[in-house]
Image (cartoon, rainbow, N blue to C red; front, side, top):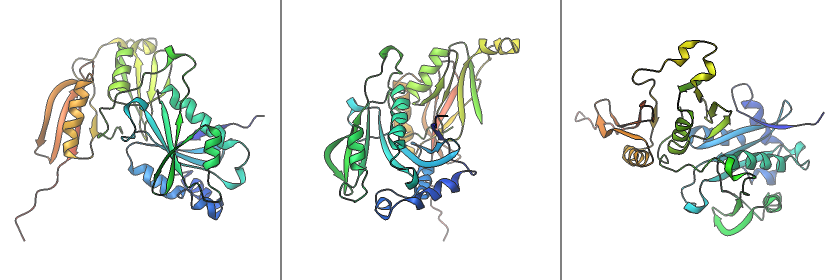
Length: 309
């Protein structure tokens, strides 16, 4: 039977086992990549990271983490990814699994419209992955950051450009796009898909003819055509009266609410209420999707200083 690799989300059941993989690395390799414990912690804090355990059959053999949004990259290279962390346990190195993982990343994110992928590494370290990346197809940009060489990979054009998901614009860069399963039932499947992918910037995890599911850190969020479920119950054919559901997206800072709201409206969201400070110590703005569902972007305001000593 052919052994296959797959990505799996990290949870309470496998976290400790994935963390222990860092102990298998050589001392030189440990100088090239942070421990998986640190990486998982950083990935959980970041609103834009995509991290997974690498499994061979039912055994974890590695870890990978990407930053999905990089501001410093030129617009013509966007959307771009940053390969933040990548490791294969020592006993599984030299067997071709590293290349297979990169192939899986390229195949998945190419379908999402990614154009470039960057990474960095220490070239002079004994067990540096520099030659591995260069052999795969990365190029040395000649630039450095924190003593590491900056490498770049250009995604190949998709086999069929007509099926490529168009790159999403970036009005959400100051918003944290983190939302079990939320499903939108709609008669405008394509319209709603375009809004949540292209305007809201949510990555598509899987898609079928009348159903798609977005990639999220913890919550499954999907869009489905009403007709898919009409045989199960005619109730699904009934259209909602008024706002069906509402989502709230946090921003990092109060000023980011204004920037995000302006960009969302510019890219197709409906303007409902412009940014304003609310009595519950938040700055908030409201916008709508194509079917009139009202969502919000918000950020916590700094608490007012007390006059009391």
